[in-house]
Image (cartoon, rainbow, N blue to C red):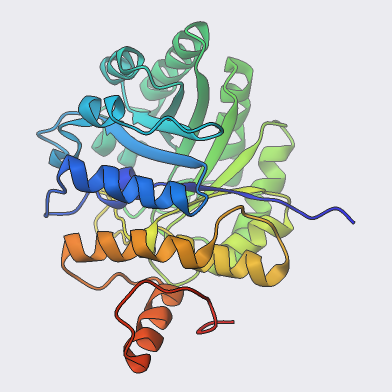
Length: 314
């Protein structure tokens, strides 16, 4: 009997913390990354190569990359928004790059300062540059399921962008519910529409703004997606999307797939110390449901050390 396997990409150190007011020191980020690796996380988006004045949390990304643990089978990636960012990433030595293209004209101008046509042209050029340099290239389609400024985004518009990017030669596409507006049927319809034009691996990047991220993830899984972004405790939010809340919590995702008999390669109990470390650093309770449940059970039992099991939510 073949066991279904999924890939979970942790985005805590990029999308997760980019909007946080508390600046997390380099040594603490490295400690949290090492804790995630110990739990079995194999794919991590660890930084964005952007202007520190706009995103202060990303001021020392080159130093972070230089000190990342070298572990067989682990892929580290960084986000870039323009050619300058791509040049910095290439110089850093990262082998995986995440490009970003908004499906919304308004969000594109807010996020990158470019119109959507200009951003598409730039993204295609960056795909070519990155592939020529030997990088693995993922392109994220932001606001694919709606924009807080301009409203709904037509499915055929997103599918057309996916066709262009597939033709450009990228290796994977990420469909992002950046504003948390999607419903499960929206997820399925979008996946089926994109599949008409692209056979590239698809990744879902889901925000839990309206409490539907886990339902949308399940809908995506049922529609054939096998890779998902998530963050420790559901931390996250976008500087350029008013009201945006965190990503889907990685503990909730691992718990769901564990109960479904789907392999993630991540040990839930071993993941919790990383979430606890991040929570202590940020100074507020993280919203992930499974993480909250664990903490309540831990408090009720009088435990003070790391968890050694998952009975609290089994």
